[in-house]
Length: 486
Image (cartoon, rainbow, N blue to C red; front, side):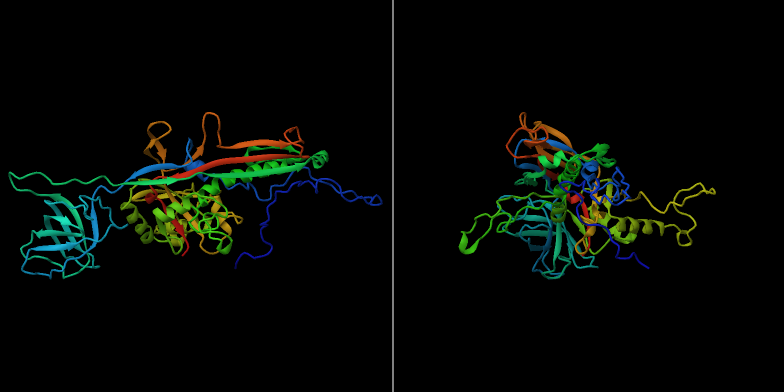
């Protein structure tokens, strides 16, 4: 059995310029002896329609003076090279071999020294390991000559020479150094490998307008619930909805924003015979939203939701290779939440019989708790439903390429704040908005026109304007996990 496709949920936005047409009598047939009964209170058929709350829970907002936000993140402390090869044969008579180090890439973190592509120095001791799955072949050695270009000379500690066959891909990492008595110190030095990231704020706008004539047609409606607003509203009902929708966009734009690529319609655009290369159609920069950053610099679990401990173990093993943050929060959609509940329930030896999991008092009014709020397996994982991923008018309505959840590290990290001029604690995820002593663009709203008390123009209407300028900063994206379909 399944949920029927019809009747379905209404996907049309409910905000209208004047949503009160059903609140007064439109049947002017005076011969009709029956007049309709009307309800003055608005029925909340969709409950709280707002989807914002994610950034309020995990982040913070702070001012920024510039239209470019930059920060530095630490690179790896230790150095490792992958896919290194040697032309020497296994067990060759020589106990010294020349190894080729690949060009710098994303799989390792070299700190360049003296123009060499390898941050290796004479006297350092290294371990060499065969990358072939199932292989146990290793060597340990000491660097005997200054690396040149992409090659380094290594003398083995093993009398049998090289353990690996010729040109087999291997890993090399430094584990220490060794020098003879009465020799000079280490030659050369390595620079710290800082990673510099930046983001640009975007300007988000919205507006609600109502004509002066419509404002003269008084109709009241009682609202309650959303955003702490309750009581009777007149024509400003749609203004209230516009405000709620704008506040949602303030958050969802920070989650979904992407930078405008060169040659795109939003940024630089090539118009063929109508323009020259580099001319812009929209002249926008875009911004790096949370999903974009985690997809580019974080971790991604694809192919559906992890539903077994073995799959979560692979996630934990990846976290071990990253920042190893002790506490993490999983913001998930409903299906992902159910999958985790089923996985955790299955760990109970009586779970299959349905006799004992969850917490209850075993009385006559017992309610069995079939859900879990979190679990610990190496790290602490707390689970929270994310309404944005469930809302059918937003991410919850996507069929292909859906995002089912995101793992966010809890806590904060220390960064240098240019506004304060000192180191400060910042959440891994936080929002920077443009502000100065004379202009605060965190959340601006103003009224223009000639109706409703406004006296700013000859327009026979009242316009309520909304504006914000902000960007999201994702510090340590390598500690985040994105869960999405294939």
